[in-house]
Length: 209
Image (cartoon, rainbow, N blue to C red):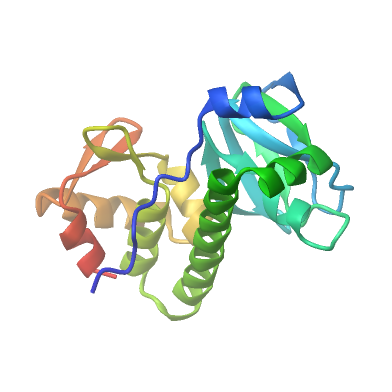
């Protein structure tokens, strides 16, 4: 059964810069974009960089180029961010006021549809992640995170994620992660290249969930 529908949830920098009143900021490695319970005045778009997402000091996600962060908090009734966003490396980020963000959603149907797909996909992933921790084996939990964080670059689907990050995301010991990945490499499901994991056979990988 196919559990994941791999959507392209990245948006163009050109659209963001053209349609939003914004400011561009550069943040160093380990700098906070915002913190949990901070007042949610802005939505952020990652122009270039990697931002880790934490909830209660636990790594729950990794966001990269072309992704928005802070949209759930912006569109909810709450006035505070529900998680912390921290730069994994030096990052260029576009900052948009939440009032301006909402105005663009109201007037641009295509962008509104994109936002709805993004929110639905994130809710689905959060639900599956919770079930994964409660019910799944180490292998299934690891496969879930690999698929969730994979990106299609036009020719292949790959994951730029370290063993340390997978350990934090899954709670699985590093040696076991390495063993599971090695088994998938032997079965020609994955290919390991330095800090990247390339998915060779997505159907077979999904069938292990």
